[in-house]
Image (cartoon, rainbow, N blue to C red; front, side, top):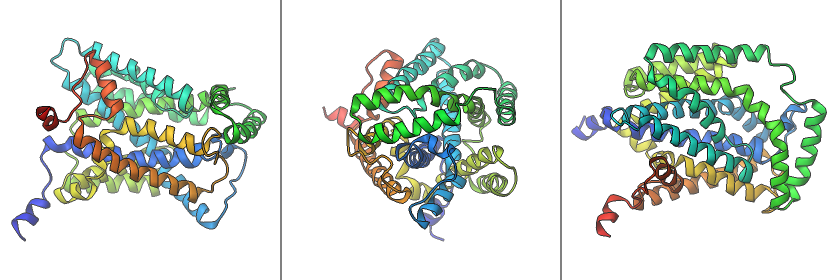
Length: 380
């Protein structure tokens, strides 16, 4: 084996692990995009509650099965784990700052404002608002020891599991209300102008809020699991045989062991361990490195997807709502995702942060952050 080959098969230094997290975030964004596109932008999110799905072709059926079994809630669970880990990373990095609490509260408050704007003006499938609210609950717990994070995570996840079997009475709308909403969505989203779509989007919030309430406890629990994974060093040291073992155990439990909803969490952990493990090697980093810029700009790319897909599917744009099959819609999504991969790489060669990441950071610190990449800043 040559020296180059030996070097490429060794794990990267722990100081480089943030790159691996960016890779994981960028890949997870594809799963989130695919589910949002196929199940919420393409058709009404409530159509799935009205009975068996109909498919335009056999390949649509196959893709739907893959997305439902391997991606759907798993991508969102993985994103929640990453957000919790990211919050813990910010918390620990600000350990020597007297303004740590103020800065992190401001960070979550700014995210909440972004989320509400996104929810009301761009797309009511927004996840940012839920994440900000969950972050406010998790933040005080980060001051505690690891055993407290463990206990709190177990408690919130146990409450979530109990809620699956005993949902609060009256939480979900009636079938008649859902049917009326789907009929209105097929008409307004497909043909309405921007103001028509915005007004209907706001009316739908009463039906969408229970869906967020149903998974809110899980979101908090996964935030805590992500924070615990960072605090315990699992994220930093998920490499080599340990990564393979952790991924195999989690994926095996998810696919063949525990049932839903624990299977969803197990699969998310397995996906995360596998990708972090691959990205910890030089060759793996080269193989998956394309996703790192996308992950660094995940906030910008997430909101941009909402804007782009809104224009493609709603009446104020191309009006393709309820007109595309799963395969056609996913092909559109893949094209948008590839475009974002290329754009993110180009952007970060010139600038330090994505546009929304820069704005978020500037508002968090209350100071305009430098935007140009270091080399360009020196040249200027």
